[in-house]
Length: 149
Ligand code: FES
Image: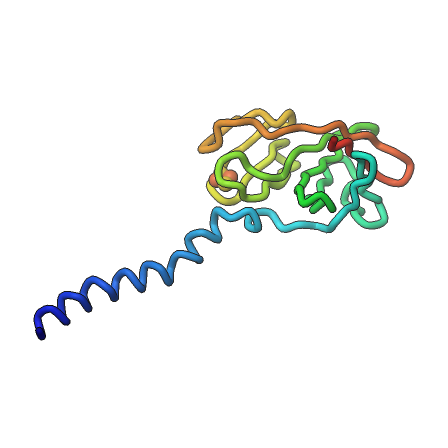
Protein backbone atom coordinates (compact mmCIF):
# COMPACT_ATOMS: atom_id res chain seq x y z
CA UNK A 1 0.00 0.00 0.00
CA UNK A 2 2.88 2.33 0.77
CA UNK A 3 4.32 1.73 -2.70
CA UNK A 4 0.95 2.41 -4.34
CA UNK A 5 0.58 5.67 -2.43
CA UNK A 6 4.11 6.76 -3.27
CA UNK A 7 3.63 5.94 -6.95
CA UNK A 8 0.32 7.75 -7.07
CA UNK A 9 1.93 10.75 -5.36
CA UNK A 10 4.71 10.82 -7.95
CA UNK A 11 2.13 10.90 -10.76
CA UNK A 12 -0.29 13.41 -9.24
CA UNK A 13 2.16 16.06 -8.01
CA UNK A 14 3.78 16.78 -11.39
CA UNK A 15 0.33 16.81 -13.00
CA UNK A 16 -0.90 19.36 -10.46
CA UNK A 17 2.20 21.52 -10.93
CA UNK A 18 1.73 21.31 -14.68
CA UNK A 19 -1.88 22.42 -14.44
CA UNK A 20 -0.86 25.25 -12.13
CA UNK A 21 1.49 26.55 -14.79
CA UNK A 22 -1.13 26.26 -17.54
CA UNK A 23 -2.65 29.74 -17.10
CA UNK A 24 0.80 31.30 -17.38
CA UNK A 25 1.49 29.37 -20.56
CA UNK A 26 -1.90 30.19 -22.05
CA UNK A 27 -1.65 33.88 -21.20
CA UNK A 28 1.11 34.16 -23.78
CA UNK A 29 -1.31 33.11 -26.49
CA UNK A 30 -4.67 34.40 -25.32
CA UNK A 31 -6.81 36.93 -27.08
CA UNK A 32 -6.32 39.35 -24.22
CA UNK A 33 -2.54 39.37 -24.38
CA UNK A 34 -0.11 41.02 -26.67
CA UNK A 35 -0.29 44.71 -27.49
CA UNK A 36 -2.31 46.68 -24.90
CA UNK A 37 -5.70 48.08 -25.88
CA UNK A 38 -5.73 51.89 -26.08
CA UNK A 39 -9.47 52.34 -25.71
CA UNK A 40 -12.93 51.41 -26.87
CA UNK A 41 -15.10 52.55 -29.76
CA UNK A 42 -18.77 52.19 -30.58
CA UNK A 43 -19.78 50.68 -33.91
CA UNK A 44 -22.89 52.19 -35.47
CA UNK A 45 -24.14 51.29 -38.93
CA UNK A 46 -20.99 49.27 -39.54
CA UNK A 47 -18.64 52.16 -38.78
CA UNK A 48 -16.66 53.49 -35.85
CA UNK A 49 -14.72 56.71 -35.52
CA UNK A 50 -11.56 56.88 -33.46
CA UNK A 51 -11.61 60.47 -32.28
CA UNK A 52 -8.32 62.35 -32.14
CA UNK A 53 -9.41 63.63 -28.73
CA UNK A 54 -9.51 60.05 -27.46
CA UNK A 55 -6.58 58.67 -29.50
CA UNK A 56 -4.16 61.61 -29.95
CA UNK A 57 -1.43 59.32 -31.36
CA UNK A 58 -3.50 59.09 -34.55
CA UNK A 59 -2.98 62.80 -35.24
CA UNK A 60 0.60 62.10 -36.31
CA UNK A 61 1.82 60.01 -39.23
CA UNK A 62 3.10 56.74 -37.81
CA UNK A 63 0.72 56.87 -34.88
CA UNK A 64 -1.41 53.84 -34.12
CA UNK A 65 -4.09 52.65 -31.74
CA UNK A 66 -5.51 49.27 -30.77
CA UNK A 67 -9.18 49.53 -29.96
CA UNK A 68 -11.83 47.21 -28.66
CA UNK A 69 -15.10 47.77 -30.52
CA UNK A 70 -18.61 47.49 -29.12
CA UNK A 71 -19.08 44.44 -31.35
CA UNK A 72 -16.40 42.59 -29.39
CA UNK A 73 -13.84 42.77 -32.19
CA UNK A 74 -10.43 44.39 -31.76
CA UNK A 75 -8.86 46.61 -34.43
CA UNK A 76 -5.47 48.15 -35.08
CA UNK A 77 -5.67 51.54 -36.78
CA UNK A 78 -2.56 53.19 -38.21
CA UNK A 79 -2.09 56.74 -39.47
CA UNK A 80 -0.10 55.92 -42.60
CA UNK A 81 0.10 59.37 -44.16
CA UNK A 82 -1.01 62.98 -43.97
CA UNK A 83 -4.36 62.05 -45.49
CA UNK A 84 -4.27 58.27 -45.21
CA UNK A 85 -4.95 55.59 -42.64
CA UNK A 86 -5.22 51.81 -42.50
CA UNK A 87 -7.21 49.44 -40.34
CA UNK A 88 -6.77 45.77 -39.56
CA UNK A 89 -8.08 43.16 -37.26
CA UNK A 90 -5.77 43.43 -34.26
CA UNK A 91 -5.95 39.69 -33.68
CA UNK A 92 -2.86 37.82 -34.85
CA UNK A 93 -3.72 34.90 -37.10
CA UNK A 94 -1.24 32.64 -35.31
CA UNK A 95 -2.61 32.33 -31.77
CA UNK A 96 -4.80 35.40 -31.33
CA UNK A 97 -2.56 37.85 -29.47
CA UNK A 98 -3.11 41.51 -30.27
CA UNK A 99 -0.68 42.98 -32.78
CA UNK A 100 0.80 46.47 -32.66
CA UNK A 101 2.49 48.82 -35.09
CA UNK A 102 6.20 49.56 -35.28
CA UNK A 103 6.47 52.89 -37.08
CA UNK A 104 10.25 52.57 -37.41
CA UNK A 105 10.00 49.26 -39.21
CA UNK A 106 6.74 50.14 -40.95
CA UNK A 107 5.39 46.75 -39.92
CA UNK A 108 2.69 45.28 -37.74
CA UNK A 109 4.26 43.15 -35.03
CA UNK A 110 2.94 40.46 -32.75
CA UNK A 111 4.74 40.50 -29.42
CA UNK A 112 3.75 36.94 -28.51
CA UNK A 113 5.77 34.87 -30.99
CA UNK A 114 7.27 37.45 -33.32
CA UNK A 115 5.05 37.34 -36.38
CA UNK A 116 5.37 40.38 -38.62
CA UNK A 117 2.90 41.74 -41.17
CA UNK A 118 3.25 44.39 -43.86
CA UNK A 119 1.18 47.56 -43.78
CA UNK A 120 -1.13 45.66 -46.16
CA UNK A 121 -1.65 42.88 -43.60
CA UNK A 122 0.48 40.34 -45.51
CA UNK A 123 2.62 37.97 -43.44
CA UNK A 124 6.30 38.87 -43.71
CA UNK A 125 7.54 36.60 -40.91
CA UNK A 126 5.90 33.66 -39.13
CA UNK A 127 4.87 31.68 -37.29
CA UNK A 128 1.62 33.26 -38.59
CA UNK A 129 0.75 32.07 -42.08
CA UNK A 130 -2.54 33.86 -42.79
CA UNK A 131 -2.81 37.61 -43.46
CA UNK A 132 -4.62 40.07 -41.23
CA UNK A 133 -8.05 41.15 -42.43
CA UNK A 134 -8.04 44.77 -43.55
CA UNK A 135 -10.78 47.39 -43.37
CA UNK A 136 -11.39 50.73 -45.02
CA UNK A 137 -10.06 53.61 -42.94
CA UNK A 138 -10.83 57.23 -43.80
CA UNK A 139 -9.46 60.41 -42.31
CA UNK A 140 -12.21 62.78 -41.19
CA UNK A 141 -11.99 66.14 -39.46
CA UNK A 142 -12.29 64.72 -35.96
CA UNK A 143 -10.47 61.41 -36.32
CA UNK A 144 -10.30 58.23 -38.37
CA UNK A 145 -13.42 56.34 -39.38
CA UNK A 146 -13.17 52.61 -39.97
CA UNK A 147 -15.75 50.64 -41.90
CA UNK A 148 -15.99 47.22 -40.28
CA UNK A 149 -19.13 45.73 -41.84
S1 FES B 1 0.04 34.94 -31.52
FE1 FES B 1 1.83 33.88 -32.09
S2 FES B 1 2.85 35.26 -33.40
FE2 FES B 1 1.03 36.27 -32.90
